Every structure is written in C-alpha cells, then in structure tokens.
Amino acid sequence: MWELFWTFMIIGFVSFGGGYAMIPVIEHEVSVNKWMTKSEFMDAIAVAGMSPGPIAINTATYIGYHVANLKGAIVATLGMLMPSLMIMILISSLLYKIFHHEIVKYVFYGLRPVITALILFAAMIMAKNTTFFSSFTLDFVVNLFIFVMALYLLIRKQKHPLLIIILSGLVGMAYYG
Image (cartoon, rainbow, N blue to C red):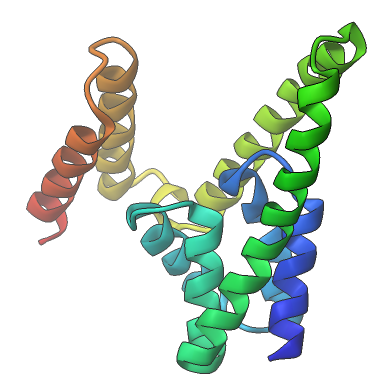
C-alpha cells in the first residue's frame, strides 16, 4: 500500500500539464511495478477518460483498485491528490504576488509547447498500444473514419464533445456489435 501511495504521490509532484500529460509517467510506473498488462492499462485509460473527473485521478483510482481493491483505490487517489493540493496552495499564494512580472509570463509561454508535446506523446502511446491501428484492415478503415469524423465535428462544426463521444460509441456498436 505504501508503494502505491508513494508512486502516485511522486507522479503528482513531478508531472506537469494535466492528466493526459501524466499518462506516459503513469504507464511507465505501472509497467515497472508490473501492476497491469499493457492491455489492462489501456482499458484503465479508456475507463478513466470516459468517467467524470480528471483522467489522472480516475486512472490512479482504477489502478489502485486493480492492485488492492477499495483500500488501493483510496490510497492511490490520495497519493495523486496530495501533491496537487499542496502545490496549488503554495503556487497560488506566490503567483498572486508575482504574476505581473514579465519573466513569469515568459516561463508560462515556454511551458506551453512542452505540455503539448507530452499530450501528443500520450496519444501516440495509446495509438501504438492498440491493435486498431496496427494494419490496413477494415477495422483500420472504420477506426480512421471515426477518428476523422470526430475531428471534423470538433474542429469544423464545433459540436459538443459529449455528442461526438456518443456518436462514436454508436458507430462502434453498429460496426463491432
């Protein structure tokens, strides 16, 4: 239990950019500790992403439950929450005093591309670890269609993400069901 708490507390302290940017770090720790297979981890990410709330905390809760049932879920969740709570209290009190300085603004401008890269890396890991995109089959074409249509509806038509999730699920049910 201590290892579970400590691992997620360290992840919470060293990861920046939100839940999706934490996925590669979480995946590494899950792999090193042999808490889940790659397939189980991908399922955890899928469930965590579709569940209400932050994906990193949902993922920690799911992994904790997988490792040690309810106690594991509570321990992993607390481990993931503690650093954020402590850091946000400290940083917000400091930033409130210094945010108007140019150097602080430049630091935030510099962090934006790194966070984008971490999120893109997480997406690449998820795509690489799934069999959907492994070869040019009918499954690949259907998944590519769902992906392209989801992007089109999000970017060009500015549809609500929940609508796109529901439509994608219905297309998946129609094809795979």
